[in-house]
Image (tube, rainbow, N blue to C red; front, side, top):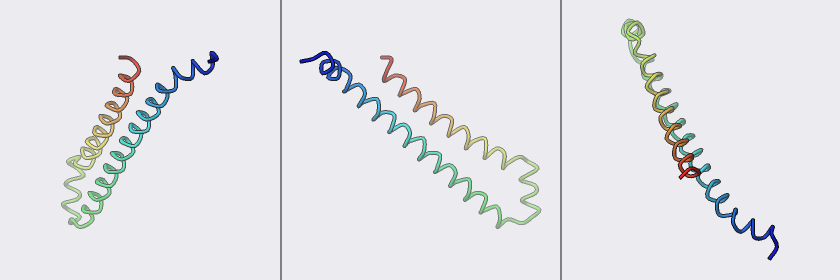
Length: 92
């Protein structure tokens, strides 16, 4: 058994698990981002059915900015949870 074979046998399981954790994290963040963007598009489409006066009142009240803030907060929370779990994998 050479040194290279021995080192590869030690490092290979860690690399495989790290790549799996990274892949799961990326898929989770991508899926949540897609879901939030779809919900925002549905909300924007639903506003088209409102009267102009009601839409203006909602805009003045900042409802649309609030929904954007909530969507951004959900995306940030999912990203932070993914990064935290990935960090815990390496620093136990």
